Structure formats: C-alpha cells, structure tokens
Image (cartoon, rainbow, N blue to C red):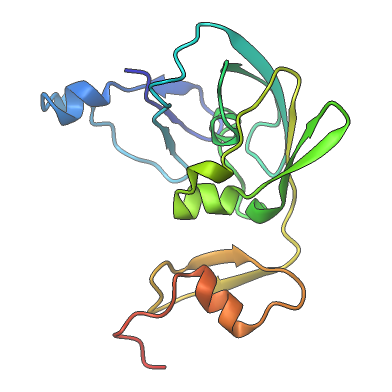
Length: 171
C-alpha cells in the first residue's frame, strides 16, 4: 500500500487504504484539511528506481521532486503540495530534452482522464502557469467550480467545462 496524503506546507503522510477500506481500521482514517491531496499510485508502477523532476509555477512547493520511476504529472503536482487556486490547469507543460509537451491537468484532476496524465522522465520540468482567464461556475452545474478558459470561449464552453447544468437548474 503506497497511498499518501500531502498537505500544503507539510510532509507527505503515508496511509494504508487497504487496512482502512477492507479491514475497517479507523486509525488510518485521518481528518481531511483544506488543500489536502490524496494520491493512490498505479499498482503497475512498482520499480524501485527514482527520478528527479523539477516542478515550477502555481504549486505549493516548487522545486525538485523525487518520484518513483513511472510517475506521472499528477504525482509531481501532489509531491509539490498541490496546485494553487490561480493555477492554469489546462495550460501545464513538460519541458523534456528541448521539447515542450502539453499536459491538461484539468482533464486529469477534474475528469479523471488518465490518458492526459503523462508519464515523467528523469530531468523533466513540469510548469503549472498562472491562469489569466478564469470563470467561476456556481449553482446548479454538474461540477461547479472555478475553471480556466481560452480567449474566445463562449458561455456554452463554460457550461461544458462544468459538465452541463443540472435538471434542477432555473435556466
């Protein structure tokens, strides 16, 4: 069991979700705090090797992060204490050997799109830039929240970001 909770400004705390969820061991059931990031790594990423990745921009603890070989962009963000509220999740990039690779962290974190969660390599730099264009969707949306939008996006694009309106919404 390699699950962990990362708190802004604190060290990562390992948690044994098997003992909590399967065996009911309540000592593993820590109280959540604002900004917590719970990470459950991929079981297939079992290599004992580690890589160093630099994480910069709108994260709680920018700097070099030691990660397991096979770690993904979301693992680097978690190791860096999570993103700040002003992070442009859709605009993150990985710098690798002179190339820039896009990473849509919004697709990863808000929609669970594992395909968008790129595997990192030794020496990669992950940049989470500041959002310049943000819209807050409140009320009867499927996923209300604050979202980054692109110049030229329309209301319908914003509604789609939040998964559409609920049937109970007074449109």
